[in-house]
Image (cartoon, rainbow, N blue to C red; front, side, top):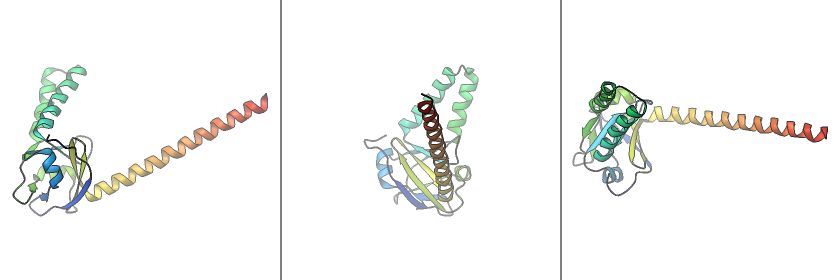
Length: 166
């Protein structure tokens, strides 16, 4: 990756050919060649520099070794990662073309994508998927806060009973 880190969020339109205007600050940070991979756990795309792409494939190998996976399985995981990754370069207008299979993976059906910087890589989300994710995340946070408050109240009541018993 180039010298700067990635932060911020940009909403971009995706045309019928799968082209989006990739944010200029992100292009400057990542470089002229972008590696776009599907995230294995969420309906998003991950955009990396060449160095980060290589580092992530090394990470896959290291995790496989650490987990005691068979060498053939580790190689298959790396092969799948590389096979599913597209190497693209922005055109003179800063647009990149996202391959159809990656568009399908991310569920970018609204025609609007959101590009988010995450220090050393970027994510591409369908705008509606991101809104649903953020809503679910906020609901989960609210539930956690409520549970913590219930636990605190229960500890307080238990403490009050101990004080009264003394």
